[in-house]
Image (cartoon, rainbow, N blue to C red; front, side):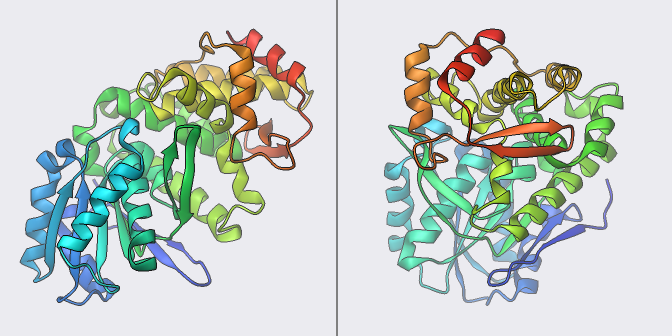
Length: 368
């Protein structure tokens, strides 16, 4: 593992920050905060879940306190089912108990769910306090921790309640992937493949040419670091060009429109987010083929790569009327029309608003 960290700048006009990959990672979190200009009198609340706390929470707290920082921790229940306003209230209560001030800091230590929840709590406590992302899953490292999207789910849909709130720092320690369950690792590979399809043909070829891409041990540390760097760089470039998803940033939702339907209708937990996105990419690819926007050969290449990553590719048995109704409630609807991100080649996509219901039905039948 390279001991020299890779620094990727997210150079936003109002809230610039760095994504630091590698180096001493969690062992250096206190020093990184001091380097960032965090005052030693700053009150810090570290938010994580019980599993992550067991592996890394105490280490992080001790490291923060060892550099003179005032840190407390709060564990919240893991999983998408707990990504709701009740959990936000728990964090707000802890913020009140620990007397967090406007100059205080929340650290999100964990996967995408922890990052989304802790980020939204930070965005809404005292009208917004600073927070830092320390992602511990592949999915969070390459996607969820970068870009400032925070929020929780509503019974009617995923991530309907939220805010844009950029972190002050994203600290990625690849060594935390060593304790990541294989299923979670594979779920993260869905987002890696997403980045390859929407804007990095070289990454796509790199994955195609790699003998094994469905496990951390099979891929090796060097390939993992390159995946982290390429994916984070692509995300940073897109966020810098469109911080609040007014245009180009929408392409980051590739596979997510269909994926959110699966999560919503199957119940959070049956499919991991990355698994649902994987099926969603197959569906979006098939829709692009039906619309004449993408070659069937490229759709097959994408599907094969998803399969090789150990991810599902078959649309689940769902009531089509419920599918269509859920799509209509998606937060990406504009003027009553669902926006789909469709690939036009490997490495390029477009935003499409001209999809009718019969095309959606035909597309899903073909991959069921």
